[in-house]
Length: 300
Image 1 (cartoon, helix red, strand yellow):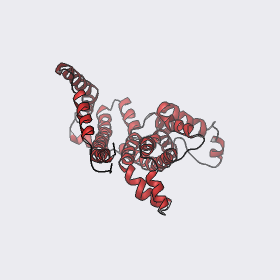
Image 2 (cartoon, one colour):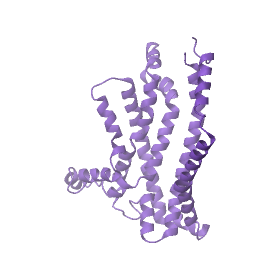
Image 3 (cartoon, rainbow, N blue to C red):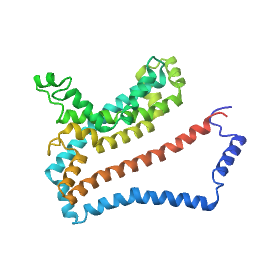
Image 4 (cartoon, rainbow, N blue to C red):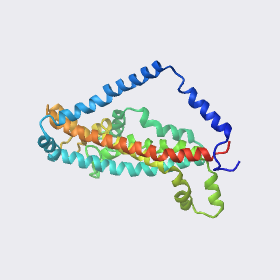
């Protein structure tokens, strides 16, 4: 069958049967499931977010903006953006390279590499931070050498960036690996036979096929980088105005009973999360027509 001519009648009938079978539950079952989902959504998502904004605005917009424009808050914002700006491009390059190697080649240790990529998902962020303390602390493996050369990793920006990179590096790779495995290597091999270089193959063949998954992974990586707390808390030293990111700044303000400022800073993180969710939904909406087109063009 020629690709792109649409689904056959049997394929259409099969889709219709599947669609009907998925909605054959009684009305009361659907109502219970939908109500349960909405209740949980309201209790565990909408209500906490609403309470954050209510606490942030409890003393008016003037106090709200004063809390965000305070020098320590601005320093935390700058450091958070700096850590994300370094970690995300690094993980973008690593994610594409790792996904390409795993999806396109067979080599010894491939499964071990996949396991290492998943490691930050299974290890507590606090443990991740302690790893860097063991490596770069005063009594760590490289601590004496770093101290002798006056290089500061812990309780400084480099340690925060390293911790952020570690906890976020699986996101791009994990989005791309199954996508590139599903697409196979036929198009790249055809381009190679036509004389395309490696860069041309990636830029003109591979990248258009993975662009939505790549963007999706970058957004998730950026969201986690800006919201990371555990690993950064261990390596930062909590030096106010110097090594505090936004999540750490929220903790300090809350511990000082400065609730309005704490909620104001937390609301900024919540806005970033909502923006990430909106962009994620937009990407899913944009990629859905392409996925449907690819499905229709597949031969049965």
